Length: 210
Image 1 (cartoon, helix red, strand yellow):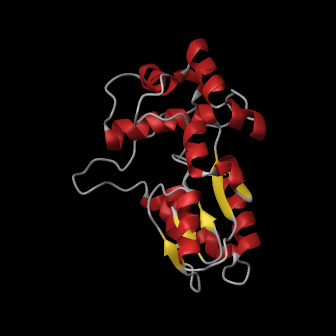
Image 2 (cartoon, rainbow, N blue to C red):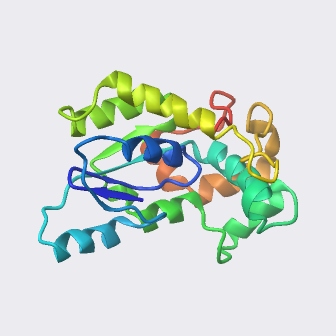
């Protein structure tokens, strides 16, 4: 997503990486090497090696998989329109490993999430982005700048597109009601590595708000 002379920032898919990306691109003194959407860490590394640059650390954002999958469904309904059906049938296509419907863990693997030096948690996004960015480039930014940009581009995401449609659709409230026992277990199986590593649980603490 964003390769610079100081760090690589990897897309996490429906985890506010687009919001954070826009703010990062405005940092003075940060040299951008590549900014291709959904570019994986391995592809970025090839670009550094091609110009003889040192490989900087990578970072990304992680989100509760049950929460994130509901958001991905509403994003599809608003913007992509790959699926004509309800949430459970959308999730079943990931479970079946259909092309174009990767599981969250599958996308994480492709991007190189396990090789990141830093991972920010979506559930405390602003504080977590401040923590990581200040650790990586304390000489280029202030905490105030980071928080300002996150707020600015988050608000931009609430705007309407040129044809009057919303940029995104927001599921009301908690992600929990979108699941039944079977679909809940599908996510527990598909995204087990993220659930175990980051200690996520299926509950009502983390509502969809991306």
